[in-house]
Image (cartoon, rainbow, N blue to C red; front, side, top):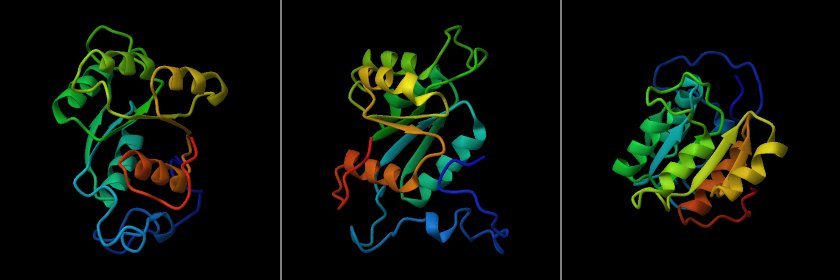
Length: 177
């Protein structure tokens, strides 16, 4: 599955310490913003029903210095957002009907609506990720309160620029939404 960057065949890392991502995918940890990773001291919640996507995001966001929380269903996402108060939420839109055990049919739109009901989660910026039809989903996602929208596979550079903007770090390029 291609989530970040472009497809390419890479040899397996020689040791466990080597990154699961290629050097081209790794943002500079020094230079533009000093020696601290962009997510240092920040929390991010990633919500997706696909555990492979969750793991890829978890590894990528940890490499950027974020403390990462994950959820595979709406009830867990809303609860985690209220308890952990992440700086940013990365949210998929599409969830199969059998995801979660709350009895509700969750999707990204419902999750955003539920979060608005709770003061602890109402103002957390939400970045939508989806493999669905962007033309059909983007306008609705933005009207529901999303601050950015990304079609899978995600453009890594644009995604990181958006994160920088959302957590208040400057960057030279404007973030594409």
